[in-house]
Amino acid sequence: MTIRTRRAAAEAAATITAGILKPSISLTFKQTKSRSITRTLVTKTGTKKEHQKTLLKIETLAVSDNIEESSSLRKTVRRRKAATITSDDAAKVVTTTTVTADTVVKETKVKAPATNPWANRPRHTPDYAHAALEHLCTADPALKPLIDRHPYLIDAEHETNYFRVLTRTIIGQQIHWKAARSIIYKFVSYYFPDGQVTVDSLDANDKTFPTPEQVLATSMDSLRQCGLSERKASYIQDLARHFAEGKITFTDQAMLKALTDQELASQLLCVRGIGQWTVDMFLMSSLERLDVLPTLDLGVRRGMEKHFSSEYKNGRWGIVEESSHGTSPKSKGKGKKVKAGEMSLDDMERMAERWRPYRSIASWYMWRNADAEDIVTAPV
Image 1: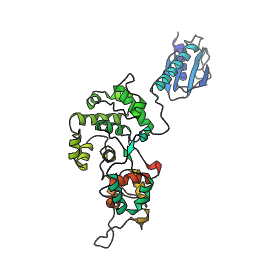
Image 2 (image 1 turned 60 degrees about the vertical axis):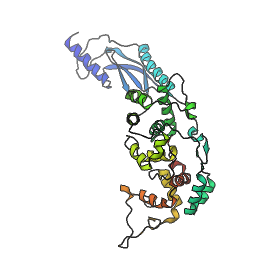
Image 3 (image 1 turned 180 degrees about the vertical axis):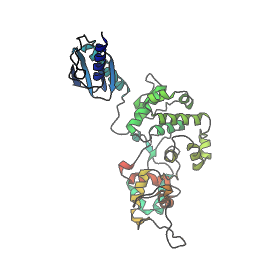
Image 4 (image 1 turned 90 degrees about the horizontal axis):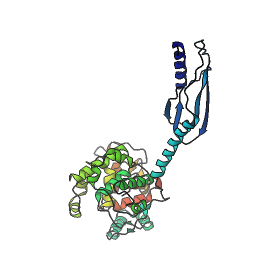
């Protein structure tokens, strides 16, 4: 092959690679719709290239073996036979990729029920409920209609494997319960394969779960394969490290009873991925602490705004004591401004003072008072 021929052929191949078809080159291809996101491109020399994020499957792509005179070079190039790949080979490449992708999806797909199965666990009315509800009706008579409509029912059985509870809570942060359910199943079944656990058994509160030491020995790549994001995988390993190293001390009921809410919170807040909302949900749901006000929970805030709406006047919630200068003090809001008609964190704490020492139970009723879309349930 002469230098001129090689130069012209190189320019022709570059034109095809760039996706610009010059008049001097004839191209025949067939495209069909497909769900595959792989595009197979066969160049002049038969080189295959794959491009992502396209909805077209290239079944056949062959370059004609005739290269005519290029208008840009205005020179005649001798006819030469192009090295091409057959349509069958090109189709096989795409088909293999498509089948492989479908297989992966089928293996990892977990069928989800229409309703949250965690909400169907056995519930009961605890012994302290009667005295607590009487106190709340006396301290806040506006609560009585809400209490009459909704009997106070909580989980009959509380999990004592707190590593399991907190891990499941971290997995469920900021995602839908269906996604959390699927990831929890993949996470547990990674440590207990061969059908030792099923989705249904976990829905029924199966206690099978890996130990902190097992999770610490797991690589980040393996945790990612369970459906966890890199950030959540690091959170769970940090939680496992705190349990394994004894930094979290409430591993039995005796230790637990000896710690105040603030002491428990100080241990948990040192773990990456655990914030005040997670701590509040853990204290209320798992430890059954009675005087917790989850000020960061949107459902509780919306319920309180509806409950205390009659006490919102002139841009203020309830009676605010005036300062020595004759003006009401400004609500700090703990660094966050709120819109008119919304409660700040300080407003929530101040209005809920009348509920002490049963703010957890009153918060449970605020969830019932809020709209359904404002309620977030932790998968504990």
